[in-house]
Length: 225
Image (cartoon, rainbow, N blue to C red; front, side, top):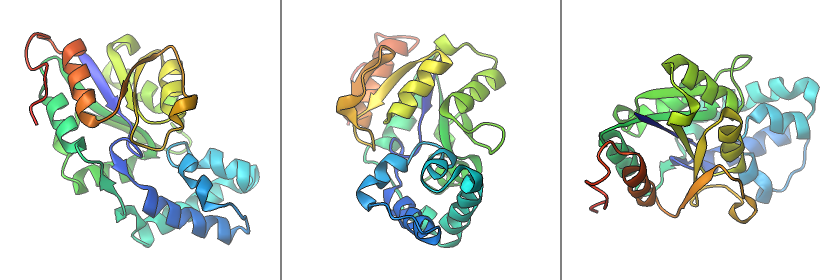
């Protein structure tokens, strides 16, 4: 059995519009001037790390609370959409013999669960490990939680994500990574030995997963669109 863990922001869903709106509100609230052209790099990593760096370590979690309250309260959480082909990617991977699908994200666990339901794709996810403050916050921690909860080995898992945080988190957890080239990553600068494939589209992910990890690798190699 192979476990495929998908990142959320920048891999499953383009969450830029809503996150950027509340990032701007949060930075303005704390009197921090940061050009919006930098915002995409803040989507994916734990917000506590971003706010500790730009707002201050002593009030980082206060700023996170402010962001979270407004992200939901202003309904910015709904200003996101699935990337084209992602629903098919999740469904086809989930239906592949010998594959279990999961989501491992530094998005708050409850928010990720809600959006998977909202997008109508939760039925294609076998396990979800999201951020829980003071428990699991980094990508390695959410991956470790999933691995330990399932009682599986890291070498039986693959992380699918779009940023260096996904790649490094997977490497720290002891697993390979499929790098998605449609999200928020600075792809030219990402080069790690645990990257086994660079996917240009969600359908590339399906083909790679079926060819390399399916129980019967001789069937369904090509994704029929």
